[in-house]
Length: 304
Image (cartoon, rainbow, N blue to C red; front, side, top):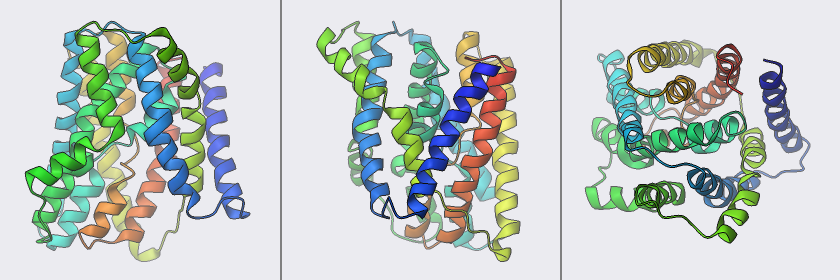
């Protein structure tokens, strides 16, 4: 437990460091986008490549891609149902902000130092399914509900496959299934670069962190938090007790269930005409809650 808490405290301090450096003016508002691009396009893909290369992938783990899709669809449906009598805009807001899991920019960097290659690859496979909805699928459904612009299949697929992390998942998945290994020089390079992923991702979260809670938003945010993490408990119980997967993989899924809300939810909320400030606050709050819950789970489940 001591090892878990020490590592978790280190990550939290990096987030705090990023936030403090932003407040004192060391980082400018545009720096968040710069660090974000470095994480999503450089360090995260390298971390994915390195961990896939360390593992002989079992076909049974492909189930995790479907689980990533299903979890998002369940949360989208939940967001719609709980706002049944609300306006179309409110329905769209809940569908977007109840669903989506921040894997690449938070969960994977956060747990990669706690989990072995199996755990990291399991997280990547879940995110492959998660990304299908997060990169445009959820927005397409929500925008239709909000009577906003519709996204056709061609533009949706273009957006999804323009994501470098998504492309990396798919390429490494195919290579693993075909038992094709990359040259040692490539993995040596990706190993070094991938080690920076955790630091940069946590620093990025600190730079982008904002928590401005207005009285008019308290009820809506509280409701969203209760539903989001209430469903996470149900998912975790299902994953741990009912899935026919190895224990290590089931433990990873339990952790993933409590991941923060996807970082792109705020952007999609804006496109659907929703409350952007409320979405941003909810997103930042979910990071705080998830840090506590995921760290506690890793300590209790003795994942380290």
